[in-house]
Image 1 (cartoon, rainbow, N blue to C red):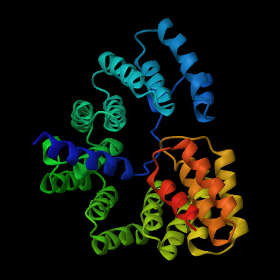
Image 2: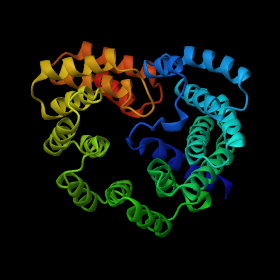
Image 3: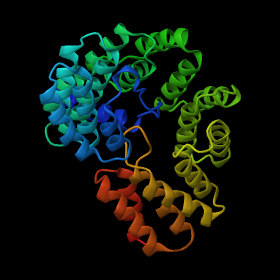
Length: 337
């Protein structure tokens, strides 16, 4: 029986990681870090931010926001155990912060995924704790869209032994829709995609494209879905919608480049956009990964009959994300030619 549950958990953790949705970068609001920390964080200098925040925490141990940003910075350098410790301190100081509980849940989720590679039973406790923290975050603030989506994504991918179940998820989506109808539509679309009900998913994502939303992150989420589906027309529609809202958003270079690669047009522009993203946008857990950008570059060079250049991109992506199955398969396929 334990082997069955472990197998379910393996699939769940892999699916949960793959199902991460692009949400708007968390609002700093009252939890804004000191200006020098904000500069380091926004420029991707997470190691330096960690060092500066560790000093600041010792100096002001009752300032929950400092522990919160220390946790965020540790999360970005994949020190998930240490990030958990920092978020736990923040939550202890300010037990009513929905945002702190949500990020603590994210850190536990990543710790569970990390543990699953070497010791599946050790992945179960942090996975359960992630679920608990997401639930607390939503209970504290039902308008915290990030927490709502994190909880729904978790339960949509989890086996029943870890809190999953479709009827329960649909109830969550209805509750989210009462707070934000568009986010409810996206959550339902994501559920259909997770269940491989692509006709239903397409219908919901089309509603978002046709809604005239003023939230750029929603278009990026739609673009992610259609990139996965290899649907170049709808990907470009989503990217165009995003560009109308914020033409200088630094994520656009990734999505525009990937869309052009998928459509097999404007290879020079596609290459420039993807290089601009890799070289100019710091790696961040809330943005498309650099590993994914390298994968799209590899696909571009393959289509241009440049196998050596393609292999170079796949290896560069794997150096950043060694367990990326898409990159692994792309490189193996290339090497078999």
